[in-house]
Length: 459
Image (cartoon, rainbow, N blue to C red; front, side):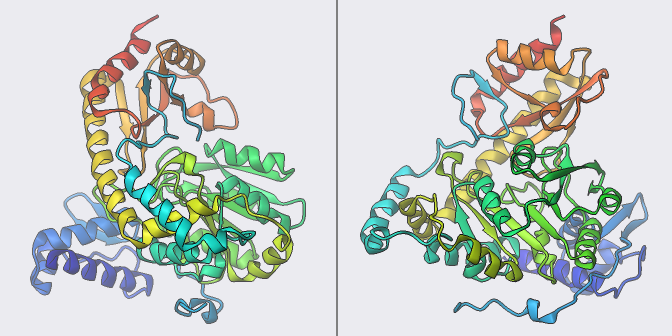
């Protein structure tokens, strides 16, 4: 416990000093041994603090020289009023495949159905008066309170329950949100990116700006050239590449939308699962100017079929949203919403997440090891130690279409990078697969990988 406290203390102090520009750009930080001696802690404690700062993009390393401070712009803060403390008053499942490498599924075999059923029953008796009436469009206030407390602790997202809207999926939430804006908006979406999100905005008649990626995430230069009204991004674990957007790029994005009076839609779709690093703070937690719309979901932590997602609106959008939806009726299941509130409040949600984190970590490590052993030098793996999938690059002359067809013939659920790209990717002797590991059983990993290899051994 003391080790964990000291690591956090050093990490938070260094982060604050870097953000307040106490360190100059590219300044060398003290060595791990020196800082450990100064703070009277172990070298491992300092190492963990430095590695977390490195993962978030505050610092970088030079071989045999140590750690250095990244060049960061100062974060613009226009209105101190927005930074006031929280006022507490106020996937489609497919069971037809023998093996699944799908990124869309979760493992529900360990879901505590007896505990959940108990909370459903408790919700019925505790909130039967509320459930006998037309439910509030934003969702039960009790669940919004629970979510506000949960994400404040887990993601650094500080908001009032009134800012939270709960619905049956992020698509439905966004469709409702855009009723508050003019019909024609320019929406910037990552390419490759979440294809269903892109199709949603196309179906709404919005203008899509497909933004290419670089090693830090979506290209800010492309944003500046196209001047979108909204930027949709997955900064904590870019989908599908897995890139974690560093602090420098986050500040660039926040500064741009602040200066141009635009908005960011942050899709934090699987932030709960990190392996070997602490949670990466959300983009919303850095925003001091009311420019970020935050999307979260329980699909990855509980199950996709539960259909409970939430959206956090900037304060300036609350009145127009309430005005546009004051006669609307929610599509959310009230009894599931109240059961989730009790599930979180009781501590059973956190207990389940810890258990699943261990299970997913074990599956992930086993799958990585098995793939490397089976494919050897024919593959390279892009693994950002987050989420429920990673990218696998494989040497092959097969086209993407051939790979997908052969996988289907062999009863393997498998997705390739082209599913998430606007244009057909150029043909080369290297293809990229999206490898999900949530649904596959631990004992099935080795036979599934052997069957996957058959695809590439055949002419």
